[in-house]
Length: 306
Length: 250
Image 1 (cartoon, each protein chain N blue to C red):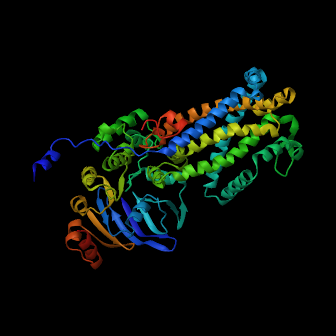
Image 2 (cartoon, one colour):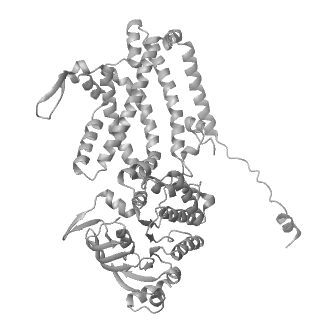
Image 3 (tube, rainbow over the protein chains, first blue to last red):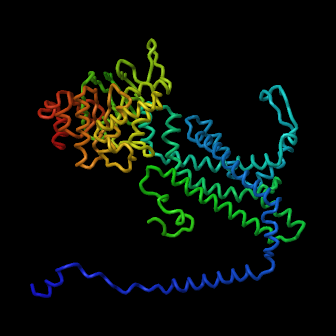
């Protein structure tokens, strides 16, 4: 061993200062994106057809606010109703009773196999199918009966149409969530003397929520936008309100973009809510997406609390 | 405490238990050993009706498991009645099966509060004592994912004990553990045996069986091949199959 070898082994190893790999492709991509963004901004500022002042005039006008309120309550009603009915359908699908399983499958087949817009058209015209609704014994005498159109409003038609459709999708999400829970959990609960319902409520569903919540958040955001389809009923939500305004002012694009601004604002609020909900149900799990920061979740990419 | 008469269990066309006759006295610790697939875990699961017996009879504490007998007719028990039978039987699983969304303390408290409807404040105190007893008093606020395998299994034992069971079933409680963590779980089980708990332990720990077990059962291919005092069975097995098995594991 000579003196030179000794020098190398003594003390801290030298920190590596290598020349990093160059990424010319990134610069090209960035330049392309920058040009496109510049074109978009230029268009937004100089194209008269946006008519920003017209948009501003209507953004907080009473008819528009009314449309926004209707969109919000329809979204909430559709999701709450859809989740509850969906849990019921999921439990039917997992039931030991073959008739219940089959009935739930039939429901899913019909409501997932036909377009929501068409379903809403049907709910808007249901009076033609059932002119009267009554209470009585099936196939037997009726005790009371009412004219359908007197009981039934456009709001009810819109809500029912969205709830029944959403339930079909939520049923599959809930079923996947329940199936994702380790069967050992149910065994452990049963071994402790817990009944089936108690096990479902205390042990299985809380764990299934971790799988159920993220797609349900996405469903809620989809629902916010799907409410625009209730123009089929028709019901005065945000998009239909915009349409009624531009049908008299002929400012089509400004009104539609104004509606989009509202949809974006509302869906942004939902995304933030989803983040906190997911974090709550990640309780007890060590890793998980919820460990990332809010900003990373919303903006994407690999940043955040890594 | 437990009596099995010609217990048979089939999964489809596969006969897993082919007529098991066994008896466990109150306060007895019975260890069950045998190769995998011999039916020892299935037998254990039959004792608390996690599996339905196809033939034969099984009693726990004088009660027929899963059925009610009137004359010579058997009636299946309702779900609630089965649940009531299981309350008095604690079970510890190979994979712990702690509830991951609850802390250690909440895991222990869950069944007494929700199933027996006991006062949460009193149960909290008792659950704390049970965690102390298994050496985890300081971990009561931890979630299962924050605990080692050995710690999780000790919480699982405390959880089963919280229901004040008359009988404890252990289904390979140390098989999923790293070797250095096996000892802490066996220590807890040894203490439990010393306190007079009736236990059926399916295990591969021959040392534990010899030291703690009152009896040792060797099962193979769905039948009880040999039963006796652990030391005798381990040192001078009577059957060829027992000898062959022991020569592989000892």
